Image (cartoon, rainbow, N blue to C red; front, side, top):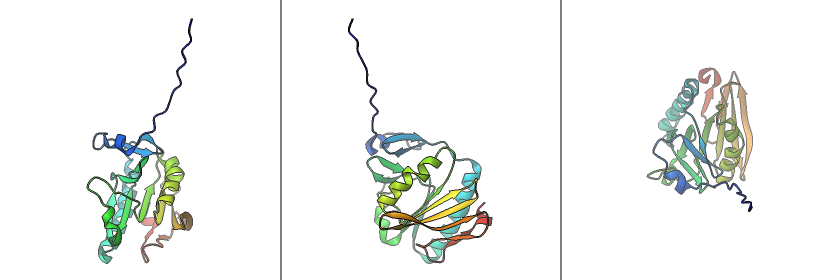
Length: 185
């Protein structure tokens, strides 16, 4: 009797595969895997609105560029397409806003942690944002009521500012912009 062995091979997905998903499908392409991301909980969305509104007001007042919110595809490579919670793109880089997606790293990315995405936001996506040229990365933790701001220095994120529960956290990229934690959480 002949024995047949099957080796399970894991398919690495690309942007072409991702693009075939129906519009609004709850997936991100992370490390060549299609990762299902459930809808955020209401508290996550409230935090997103609060930070996003303050950022939008600042950017509009100073006419610095564009603020966009999830869900929007940010293409970073053939195996990395994310939907960050909030992004900022400066006037000088408006050409990265394509017809269907953001076609390169935004200047600033804000990710609000949730149970389903925290690992990716803190590890894999952070490394990809770093190497892709995101200039500033905010990690917002609703459970800890904290915000960490990372600055990209020579392709490596360095912690610029961290605040928990009270106080103000500010941007290095957008001089004068910041948020009060008491108004966010």
